[in-house]
Length: 350
Image (cartoon, rainbow, N blue to C red; front, side, top):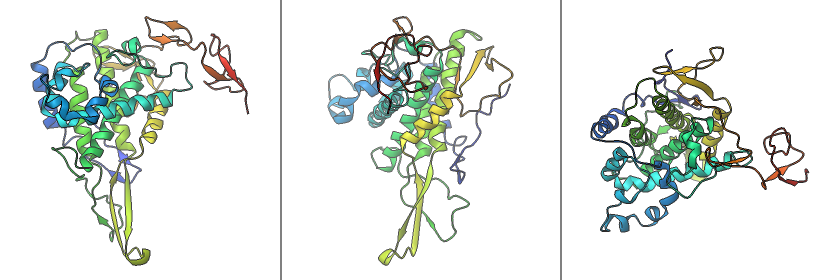
């Protein structure tokens, strides 16, 4: 089976962005250097920056000037991510903001689901749920990676990062010939490549026996990280502004702009609903051959989801007892005992 890992994606069918193959190599080579010099990954997840990073966001200089360096105080990073942190310290506030953006979007998208993306008070962020290769874990990895692409890309545009600036994306071929391609667009090219290097190094520095379950989970995470990054690219749009006296629009300037992150979340939620179950056989293979092969933009999972209706410390389920449900709804926010077998508080339908 050959998956189209490097297929280019279009933004709103108007603007092809051929940077995926071209600009990632410096970050990949840097990450490979760290992989060769790294041991086992640390406990927890880099997404923990989204929960602990409030001080980093508000006053990063206090960390940089303290006796203990910033990067060594951030729990959840792997060895490779910690080394990248030292090289890109001014990026870490944006990584933290992106992780938080992804966590909040996850909670919004799943607020009426049995699993509602609840967080825990440790560096695992979501607890044992992420230890299961379920479609929920697939979504969590994808939306977090997407969040970092979003915040880093915007940080470049706003002049907040030392290693990037406005987008240098090529002019769309179908843009009106009299319109000017310029302005300061969101630098999705840089946001993509930085996120690939930072997020994926955690998986790439881990060496697992070929064909093992751990290798399968590694490949699953890498695939879903990529799907999250591509979701941001998929939703990129071309924005234009008129200039002229009294609104005459004698001059039109256009640039590349990120879509609101809610659109990215909605897109990934659709991918969650249509996620593909895969198995490991030296590489990921689709479990049911009757289904279509997943693309690089689709989510994949290797484990069935646990029962989130009842509390279970092993799986990280908080259960649904006591949560409000809509007794007139046939959907996941309903109170159908066949859907959720534990007690609920009910609300009247309108």
